[in-house]
Image 1 (cartoon, one colour):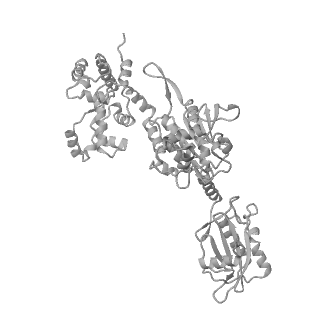
Image 2: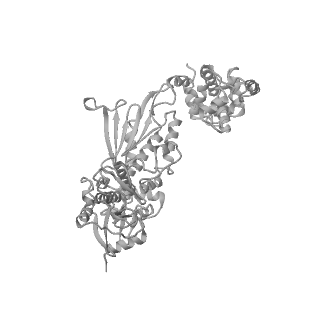
Length: 584
């Protein structure tokens, strides 16, 4: 038979356990030992209101008035009218706009002394304040002031963290896209039934009678996801220009909403976004070619990040993608979790915590996502590899945004200089070295280390060797001469300028000469022979760097990406051969 716990039993248990985050004792007396007198009722009412507000804004708790901090019951020796006023404090001393959720109030007599019991549950309907505007929260055994915005954020975060793991009444296997589950099951557990695949991914539980589905299962696989989440969608806006304008100047040329369960949404949304990222440009080959303004993999990672980690407990908003002329911005509902900051992400240390762990796990199994924490590092690396500035991250109270800028890491002057070396298909690190020697300036080993942020000498040697093999960098000051200069000037050898960048016109002349010499060979998909390599040396100009004594032509051809490791011509060679073919 069920029995109700009596107020007196609550008091006796509290005295045994002592104060805690969920229990507070307040004395109704003041003054020195042996001369105690009743406290001012106004002070006790303030204490009651502040403690109950702190409990309600935290995890709930019980307040016993008439008990000392050590658990000694000293009672409430006030008049009947004063006691009625104390019992009314949860109403009179709490802001009327934020009333406490049904506080419990009770009189308890212990050894002839009156104790007042107040109890309140954790509130989910409001952020409570005292009548004088204080917002408090319980921290261990104290009630401390806190901004209402922080309480709101914490509650929203708690809701968002638990959203995808909640079970949904009324949802069954008929609510899901069974062929889609079966397709994923073939990857993660071939031969296993759809019901067991869902349980394996922790998207469902079997209670002995039927399968119970989590929200994550519906978000990922629902036939009609709008029934279960009205904003499981991505809205894509193409803005003409660099800023969105209102009214008559509204400059959105395309506004499209893509809906569907997450696995379908990611595919459809990417197809829609990609259409707005493609530019048709005239290349040096004389042909018009399609080029995506940003690395496609980086864009996909940003989209997946937004869909996987958005706050689904906010059912009134979806992911939004704004494509401007100069940038792409992806906004997702919900700020970062409190355990992760923008600074953590910018350090690219792999900091992560999944808001939607069941969704994220399934996306990893479906190979949409890589290892946890790798997505952001991959986005930054891809932008860097394509000479574009770092992504911009912005976290607000209810929103997180990633912006990819179509802006080169190099200035216009830098780009004009580097454009002269387009035929060499240089990666970013090699471009940075070329900038050190712009306009004929000599540069040092230390300058290369500083410009690229290198710490590994082997990485430096490989980089410099590759540039020398490509015929772009030459040594102007020998190591012996540099050592002598270092001793005279009392600096390190690494700081002595030794290297130069050859003139772009000379570099391109040698490259064209080499490609035309290679074109004279009759090679059909087979490796070059030593005899053919010797023939190439004989056909190129005597002052061509690639043919000089001591130059390793096979290594140079590989560095230039004209042949692969087997000395077989590459697609890059064929493209350049067509570009530099002699005019008839």
